[in-house]
Length: 352
Image (cartoon, rainbow, N blue to C red; front, side, top):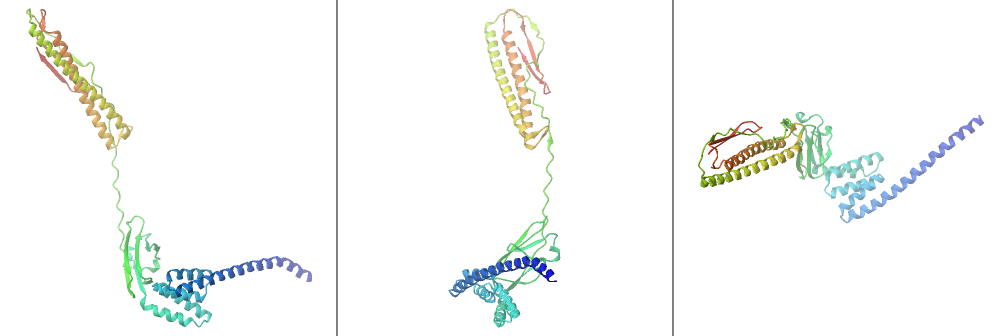
């Protein structure tokens, strides 16, 4: 039996030592917290006596967190009262009265009397949420702090001030309002309406499919010249020859200008076509790409027609020059036809 007791003692000794060690640490920590709490309490008392409630109340709050003492709680409640925070003071006096009653402390009457004095001055605010407004996932906040559903419709004492009430739920538009809760003894209600559904965005417009084939360049050899009907004219008129040459120069110059305009329009169409590539994917273009593509096609078709007319005019000028009056058969009529590749027929007829 003695040996068994010795074995038990050997087994329990380390455990008992560990418990004692941790108990000592906890006691040392508690003593350190008590010392810090007392220092903060003394500082708070000095500040409160000087009327500096803005700095005194935080001293008492921190002291109470380090070490819960009835005197600290009573002084904190008194500080709240002097700062105008009636709801906070009332709650602290009630808590102090409860602790004093449990501990058999004679200050229980002081705490109850102070709480009773504050009762008529309390500002109460009820956040009313009707059943129709209680949407799935509804969150109601007062100054950023969530209001539990259990507190809906319940008047709650609040410190005097201005409060923002907001509500939100997934798929619904948010709501908020501001309430002035500064009147002493007032009982206010803020009703949360049923939130409006977030409107759906319209479906995006389906992309238009356009033909991205590049416009055809101005024709180079689609000018058809009708057969020349020669007529004998044995007379040589040098004045008529000069007039014919001047006409051929004018028509030729106009033809060259028309060809130049056609080429410029062709290059502009090519430039537009290159711009359309940035707005198109394959054969699908957005609205801007479709507009640019349409402009490029119009420029290309116009360039084709103008360039063809210029070629016809140049060919006419050559014929005019070569058929000037001389001692040889002269053409009475010459006609030309321009057949653009883009479709349609443009005719040019000249009479001599």
